[in-house]
Length: 293
Image (cartoon, rainbow, N blue to C red):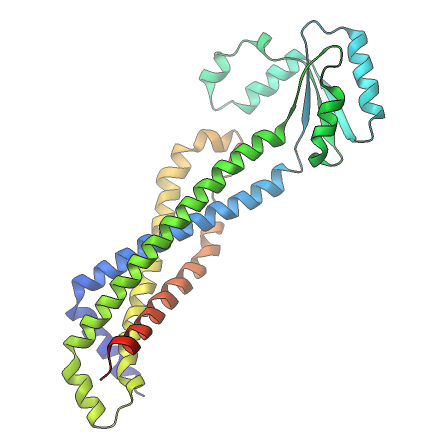
């Protein structure tokens, strides 16, 4: 089989159906871009879980009216609790300093929050963060305690939001992928029909079906590869123009992790493989089902 013949047929096919090819590439690019966004979100969620779950603290907030004796009693109970790994006491001034540092990128929030609003607390690390309900039950209602809060609850809400965003993105990507498959199928049928005379002559002189169909499969796979490259470029643009700028405050405050270029590079081969295989397999089955000659 001559590679030069296959490549010349691919060029011919792309040139003859240029508008359909462009539509196929763009549809594939959008589908792969959404799939890539879903993979990036899933990757970020996993890394954030690994990072945050080791830093989860339980905050035992104290009433402003709590006395030294009540704080000393709570400290003794924390030391004796088998669930507690370590703890520190943070007074109102220290809590406000930490609040200012945490939200340094959101000055309106900092200036609008009086220092007196932030309560003193015991910040507690548990040996097993999943046993938070036991600790909460133990300290809730104690003299001097206003409330007990687990950072894991806040993180779970954040992760639920991100999981929903990931699932919605992947769902839209699947719908787009179906549209891309139909478009690839139509494009290949049209390409095969427009070149039916050439392929018919080749079959008459002894060319195998595989030999005559390979240029169409390569043509679709090439379009899938271009779509994957555009999808990776789109993800890079979205990172630069949207994520890095629009979410810069949330990222700098440490609530969300930045999306680095390494993550995009990691998923790029996956998108390229999916694009090439998706288009190639769709073309193969289209030719097997609809093109008999």
